[in-house]
Length: 122
Length: 108
View 1: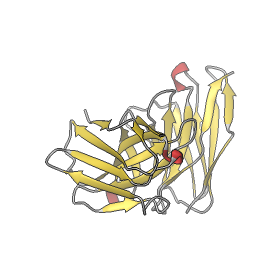
View 2: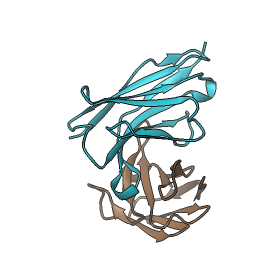
View 3: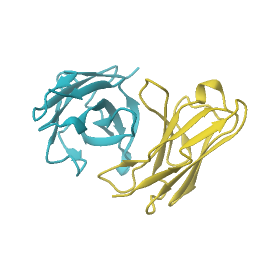
């Protein structure tokens, strides 16, 4: 059974970089037809897609965050990572890693990690 | 960017009753729409994709319909485990994929 697990600091200072890693177990990150990605949810609010990556390194980003985001993949470790630069309090959210169904250009999220709360505060 | 709206914001339903949730896109998304369920303190989970196809393990009481800009998620007979927040998401025109603001289904 596929499982995704987020890890990383729960507290980040303003202007610094938020870094999270997602470890995939129960399946290979290098499997075709799947992207992998990040979605966030501010406390009490809705969902925002951040970006996604294929095992080859091909990426898509939300234009609203693109200037601050980098998503990378490590196929040897079966992991992918999120880096969000110059954070502010508005970046405080639960961050989910997800598997993205991507056959023929479709793009929905069929497996989610449990999420990790990241608070931006000094 | 396609803007998704959902109505109502909150739906109060008695167990055993039918719930009908609506989702509207600012422009056509064809059949490229998914629904997710989020219970308190949990991650969302996929319920419907392709506007009407149930995800693996989703019971038949969940059904999706619609095309273009107007979509509906129907829960035919609400069970206690169905009380949650439901989000729709379009993946026709991306990036970015976009989500609706959610509908909370609570106990009447």
